[in-house]
Structure formats: C-alpha cells, structure tokens
Length: 329
Ligand SMILES: NC(=O)C1=CN([C@@H]2O[C@H](COP(=O)(O)OP(=O)(O)OC[C@H]3O[C@@H](n4cnc5c(N)ncnc54)[C@H](O)[C@@H]3O)[C@@H](O)[C@H]2O)C=CC1
Ligand SMILES: O=C([O-])CC(=O)C(=O)O
Image 1 (spheres, rainbow, N blue to C red):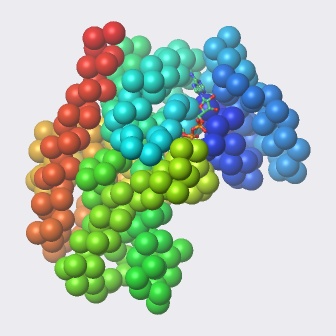
Image 2: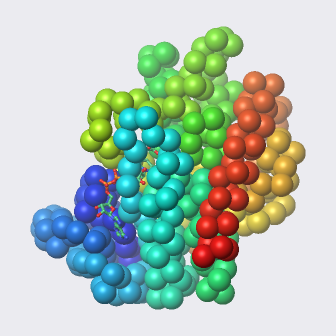
C-alpha cells in the first residue's frame, strides 16, 4: 500500500516514469500532476492492467489534492537543457517551480519522502530543504536528490570498454553532486574489480561526468535524457518503496549530510569538508535515510580524492545558490 505522486507527469521524463510507477506492483495509488496535458496521460496509463489507481491533477488549483496523503513525491517538473546550456542555466525557471511544489507537499503531506529530479539538483534539493524548514516540517532523512542516472551510466559505460562485465549487476558508487565535475564515480570501489589503467580511468570518469551532454547534443534542441532518466527514477523510487516496506536497500543519492552526522564523518574527511549536501551511498529504510554506508576500507585513489576536492568547490556554490534563493525570497 504505497501512494505516489509524480509532479511534472506529462513531461518527457514524467510520462515514462509514470508508466513505470504504474507497473510497480507495490504502488496502490498514483497521482499524476502537471500544469498541461496530464488528463490524457493519466487516462492512457490508467488502462494498464495493474492494481494501482491512477488519478489526474491539472494545474495549481488541484496541486493540494495531488499531494495529499502520499508516501512519496517524485519531482521531474521543470525545463530541460538545450545544447550550449549548463544545468545551472535552468535555475532561474526551475528554482521557483520546485519551491512551489515542495511548499504544497510540506502543507499537505509533511511526512512524504521527496525525490527531486528537476535540475540543477545540486541547488533544487537545498531549495526544498529550506522550504521544508520554513514550514517547520524538515526531516533530512526524507529528502533526496535523484543521482541514480549517474550510477546507471557508470555501470553501462564500463561495459562499453569491458565487454566481459555484466552491466546489470555491476555497481559503481558515484558521490558528489549531479553536474559535470561535481559527479565523482569511485571506479576503484566498483563491485567488480575493473582493472583499468590511469588513462582509461580518466576517460571513463569524464564520460560519466558529462554523460548528460551526450544526450543533449544528440537530441539537438529537443531536450535532455528522458527515457534513461525515467528508468533511473523508477529504479530509485522502487528502492525507496521497498525500503518503506521493510527491506534494506542501498542507493547512492544526494542528501543532507546531517541525516547521518556520524556516517558523514568519513565523507567529510575525504574532502567534502563543511558541505551540507553530498551524494553518498545510502542505506534506505522505513524512515528514508537509515545510514550513510561507509566506503570500503583501503581508501580511495589519489585521482578520486582530487576529483572530490574539485567537486566540493563547485558544490559549495551550487548549494549556497539554492539556500539563498529561499532565504532572500
Ligand atoms: N536528475 C537527473 O538525473 C535528471 C534531471 N533532469 C531534469 O528533469 C527536468 C524535466 O526534464 P524533462 O521531463 O525532459 O522536461 P519536459 O519539459 O519534457 O517536462 C517537464 C514537465 O514539467 C511540467 N511543469 C512545468 N512547470 C510545472 C509546475 N509548476 N508544476 C508541475 N509541472 C510543471 C511541464 O508542463 C512538463 O510537462 C529538467 O529540469 C531536467 O533537467 C533530466 C534528466 C536527468
Ligand atoms: O544533462 C541534463 O541536462 C539532464 C541530466 O541531468 C542528465 O542527463 O544527467
């Protein structure tokens, strides 16, 4: 019995993500919200023969109902990139969208778990945290930035250079944030030893960091990753849902490090210093973040340590931008 709302459900990510959530047999209620086209999307998906009840909510007047009595809100609402843009260029429009959606969740389902896909994730998640704090309902264990696509890309891109490795089972922890050099794949800690030379590690790291650009370029003005993102978003949501029903599941995701201050110590020592938010491998449980999973003993490589330092510098700015947006509103 899990109630899920998808906010931005009529979009490029929202439509396939909503379909995948309809296919998730643990979902019993699926609320689809958008400011356009959502009645058609909901009618269409509602015919899929699973037990989840699908409802459509159109426009701000129906937002409160869309986010009432929900366990999980997934937010892919907002504009995507075009060639030549960075994710930060989306801030101007998407910051306000995320702020208003999270305000509605805070008021109507203050205990809901919130998973934010809208870019720039490095700033939209801090925005959500500030909104929840202002509403007096903030629980850092229940707020997530979805960085699963970076993890998915890491598993797949390894396969492109090591065809003997099974992409479906390989797990590469990806830490930091979700844009360019804030994305730090820890290839030395992959679940299978990759045995790559320095040049291969450098190239693969770069490809994972800028994987989003490959899709933006190929779509040539028609947006960014939608289908692989829907897959990644549904995978993350399924992990949250399984954890809500008692399973212990590990996913790297962008969180407020105070959700597990003790577990965050190791990450801080690696170069994340005073950062408030960072993507880390998280064990999920009934209440969201159960704990930050320690990185394996033996330590990360010098290359990865340097990459974390670079990521931390950029992230500090991104986080401050998000926090200040709400504080100065
Ligand atoms: N976290 C990640 O790994 C990824 C994040 N993204 C981000 O996801 C976001 C959505 O991307 P797409 O689905 O491709 O864009 P899209 O433009 O196809 O869809 C966005 C949807 O949001 C809706 N929307 C706009 N304002 C809204 C509001 N106030 N309330 C509810 N819905 C609203 C639009 O009507 C549209 O249906 C972008 O910001 C994109 O950068 C994209 C790929 C990966
Ligand atoms: O690149 C983008 O703008 C969309 C995104 O976040 C990704 O594909 O990782």
